[in-house]
Length: 396
Ligand SMILES: Nc1nc2c(c(=O)[nH]1)N[C@H]1C(S)=C(S)[C@@H](COP(=O)(O)OP(=O)(O)OC[C@H]3O[C@@H](n4cnc5c(N)ncnc54)[C@H](O)[C@@H]3O)O[C@H]1N2
Ligand code: MOO
Image (cartoon, rainbow, N blue to C red; front, side, top):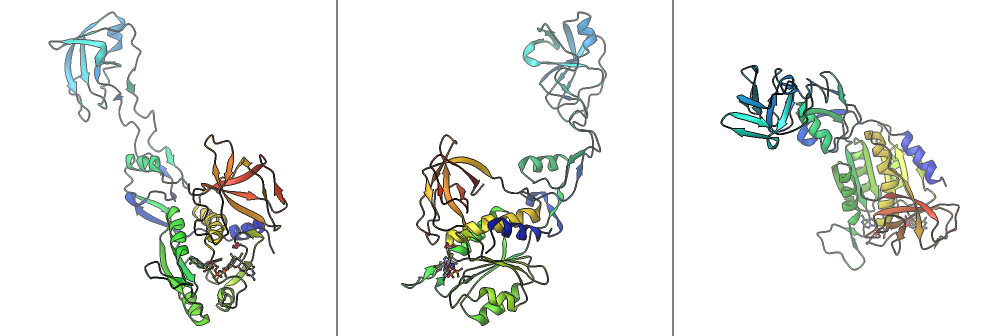
């Protein structure tokens, strides 16, 4: 059986771009930029007053002048009509263009205004004070946003400033999701005594949504070779196919054989991890990446996080998920020589990890209240209390 790291390397070696597409800015949140964005003009585009106040020629101030007549009031969005003459100032608002004949702006609260004149009440005035100079943030033609940046709110704001109402981003994959199993019922039906509800469909849909991906098609398939064959065949035109259940050793676990019958080349089946050991992964002749996950909910969550999410992150140009290290509170022992992933929660002081109890990978509570997943390494039977373990954040 291959190890977690070997399986991850195989998966990552098949990562590919799904192409680019142009989207409206309102739909660009969380997407990855697929074009370089340059400044269309200087920023600020003009010398801009940063305060409400009065703009003067500093040479006159240096010559000892304290009292100025207001020549004109300049509002944001307005252009001054006249140059300052001797003894004059402008009354100017925040965001307005400072005319060339003025070289400093004094805050409103630092002057006394009366009958169209102002007396300046401050000791020191610096040349260009309270003026953002044209082009001081960016010059026309400067590279502002590089390909690969994620459209977080700050990037969206910059795109808006630069007038990019449409933007080229990495295309998201078409994802098809098939859950399987005769005992698994839709959540709006009443399950019989030995039936359960299809939580994994919702789990996987929500996990994909966190990456900004909407499932294109989702279907539940019964444990029948024929139904599986036709469903999988009909979905093989997508970029990524996720199946769930029917991959281990049971008499009705037809998923691996059906995939292979349809020409999906097996990359691996079974990985030395707990939970999630029975995972199957393959690639179709047309390049569809297929992940068949074990049916237990916690196995489904872990295999999605450690494999599918990492694959998609690489395909979409996100950096790999961050892995941290912290001491674990309470020791733990494991029975199998596999990498074991277990639910944890960051202590309030952020200095250690607490373990969250989970009964088994079939526990519908999935270690609720865990905000992280830690790794008990394959080669360690025991992790002592206070020993450092590596972990990753669960839903951030
Ligand atoms: N002889 C062996 N038996 C099993 C092995 C093994 O290596 N040898 N592996 C065990 C492990 S580990 C896991 S995990 C499970 C995985 O089995 P399958 O992937 O074949 O999944 P199923 O048997 O179909 O289901 C397992 C479990 O999960 C429930 N399930 C399935 N689908 C859903 C869904 N959409 N929503 C909620 N719950 C679901 C299902 O009812 C089962 O209880 O195999 C072990 N057996
Ligand atoms: O490894 Mo299975 O995925 O525990 O229950």
